[in-house]
Length: 400
Image 1: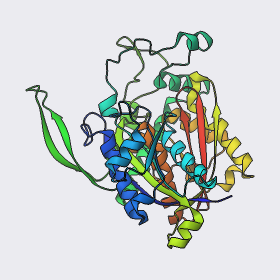
Image 2: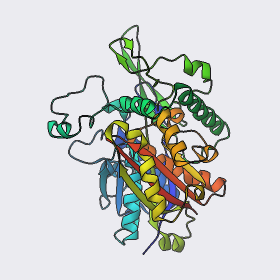
Image 3: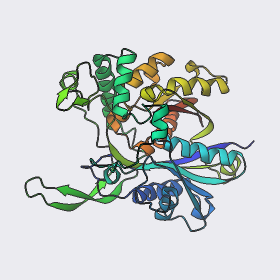
Image 4: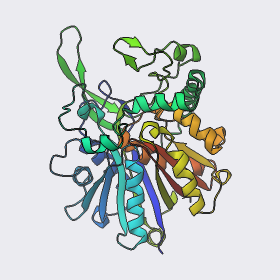
């Protein structure tokens, strides 16, 4: 069977949803930006690409088409290149890369662009149309199937005894590691600056004006964070205006809503060798697993063992782990339950500090793990995350 290798990666900086640099930037524009950059970095002819596969939890700007096809169009791929969208919530970007890799391994593609994008700013609103958004057929079987992610985090905190202190301590670690990584330029190789237009709302005049901006870094993290400032935050989950007793999840120990896109070029290993391209890494496999809907955050606990068993590996064989930080409580639980060395986990911080554009994060984590793995002379890296609805996904890559 053929091997699938990743030969380039490119992403935008992550901008705060609703008030950051991408708050008026369409998803296909962000997707197109990273598609173009990834293809250019790979040094291939855009016409050689067989498919452009993109993940998104909620497709923005698509109407009757899909975000993969539209990102390809915006990214300068010719009409001959097909496009496909994938949705598995927060694992969508990882699933896109895995899908492209498997098609290459099965001799269906030679070259593909794969990644993820999310424009929370232009999709998520405070007042959603709730008409028939919930299936009575499903809720009759599982009343928790549509439980809000925030509430599932509270369930995990309570059910598995993850204290508020432990969550805040982990969140501080994420902030500090991200700040150090930014200062040392460890994200610079993956970020491609993007010029765009930002909408600015004036609270006094109630008017909106627009200004030109360049998003060239992640702007969600808070380097000045302290344990004291985290401890001072009120829990988000409330009953009316009253904080429910025993609630732990705050804005400080949760992932940040943000906008962004990430893409990579995946191709047949022999073809890459013929072209003289040096791969960043090799796709080795993927595992997915289900869990209870009300504790979706612990999905990696079920997906990771399946992945490692299939490849004859142990937790200690993995040099770097990227475990998406949806909420600190679920990361702490998964880390401790799986026995992951904290020194190998999210070494440059994660979504609590960097931000979490749902469908994009998995693709960002793959690119970052391979680049960081090369810096650390790592062999195996695992990208894993919990998934809304009660699932987990884990992908194995070998650093080239």
